[in-house]
Amino acid sequence: MKPVLKHIFQLKRTYEKLPFFDFLRDDELSTRERLAFFPCMASFIMSFGDLNRLVLRSEPTDDPWLKMINAHTYEDDHHWPWYLEDYTKLGHDDTKQTPGDTLRFLYSDATIQNRLLAHRLAHLVWGAEPVVRLAIIEAIEETGNILFALTSKIAAQYQRETGVELRYCGEFHFNLESGHAMNNDHAELAQITLDAIQQQDALQRVDLVFEWFALWTHELLAYANGSAQGAPRTAQAEAELTA
Ligand SMILES: [Fe+2]
Ligand SMILES: [Fe+2]
Image (cartoon, rainbow, N blue to C red; front, side, top):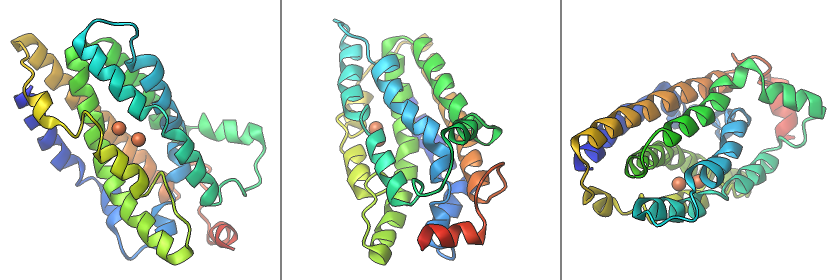
């Protein structure tokens, strides 16, 4: 697994240079502008709970790798309520929209990568043997580490400005993610021995994880920039949200 972990960290260094993350680092923009991508990722974030509960978790099992994965899924399957909490706190529940329009948005072309990412990851996981799934999870965790390290800084600034604590975007979530039994313990992962076929398979699958998450970030950035269809990014909409 060591060469796979090394590869993941190389991919992570490229991933953090994507335009979306430069956008999140851009101090010229207000915290609200930088968090404008937030509604766009709804379907993926909600699906991530299901990916853990329904795709990654396999119970009952005697397989030691699946046991490790199962334990991890119990840490990661219940973060979406914090997403909904921030969704409300950021004012998105105040926008007048019919349930039909909400569904239309969630299934619109503006959010294709979000929907696709969940399907793609499910396919990737189900096609892999358990020990390779550990590499997939590790790659996913590292993409999350880049995102939440940046959003937690924005959330801290947002809290200074407004007094509102964003738990999903903020340190609350980031600290939990950083303290995960598995992604905290790279040493344990590094000790796992993969045969040549498993290693090759793991390398290819982690490449795909980063490739698909990169597409996801491009979609979030497009939405934040208001270029995505149906994105309410007018100055007036902003003013209404902050009023
Ligand atoms: Fe999480
Ligand atoms: Fe996680």
